[in-house]
Image (tube, rainbow, N blue to C red; front, side, top):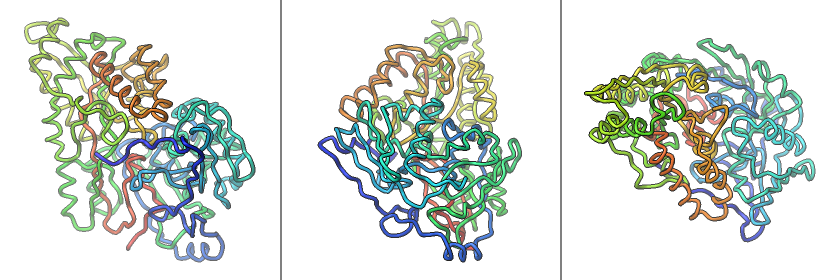
Length: 537
């Protein structure tokens, strides 16, 4: 897959200052990361602004939660353009880069971190960003304790040293500059209006875009508009308007792209992607990802509560046939962690074995000459790759006298059902919150009384203890952490059989040919950073 090995904690041997650097893709304007001042230049640019609306066509509803403290789902595609963190992960340099912080340092073996904040930044509410405001935002996120708030678990206290200096004292060493680049729970926002965000009528970010309108359930669900006082400034050719047009059917999205009614389709099936590459007015983009597909088996109730049934299901998946049918849109993984992250383990590649699957089912009382096994499965409506998996698996299981009752669902509905343990198999994608493997384990497989993403409902105290030790271990002893990740994956996949991993995605996008400046950053899955785009038309 790609590039990144976990960044070790800076400052293990002493204080290390990470100086501000110019960001790729025009993310920071001016020398040394100094923002272009607003005023006559910005106003002049606005007068000649690109009036086109950039239309993104997701296949699922966009917003599940407007609170930047608890947001933890598809709305990342919008929130990443409305809100910003102290840093942002650069997929090319494989390091965090300046965002709301221009430089940072670590000391005390990685247990103290100091960030210098960018000057001249305002929230969309008009309030000024300073260290006290940033401190309040992170402390509120920690107190809310929802979504990905766990990323701040190492924080002991935060001090606003002065108006532009934020200091963190940690309980144990972690790479806080990397954590601060998270796509969730790392946002800095104006806490003064936090109780007014739920309806999507306002937001409290510092990013280049602000909410224009939100109509839950409508086809054009969300529109954004330029925040005129954005610290990064504006150029005439940049898109100042953005719309998210929910298009569940991939063929419809492709037709709309060809007609010029949408500008970006996040996923096409292999046949349409190949066609897009030969279509005038359309261009394609392809990149390996940190996103894999999980089949989570209900370990708490129903027929899959029997580990032999779960192991049989793992062995029934035709991993090689599926990746071949995906024609480059996915590749076979090894374990839970995609290649390129600390925790990836070779030698855990899954294999189909129908003979053994049939033996296991027979031991559980099911099979061709035994009782029929009926299983319910839910997956994402409009996702052609998941549909392909389900089609192939259903056909295979029929040979074993297993009927798979598969239902495509809108994400919110599928997730609500999953939290109620309403299915035997829950199919979903997972990707890291920041460029690190920890979130697969903490979120998906750590015990939870009220499941959020632990949709296998696994409860294992020994696994929980090993998961909790990962962050500090990763920062202080990467070799031991790598072994711990390997051991955990064997326990979860082989011993508990809580999950199967059919493939790791390769991102295949299609967009209007006149759109310039697009780059895919797999650390922020499916996010288009609209401020970096311009129209050649």
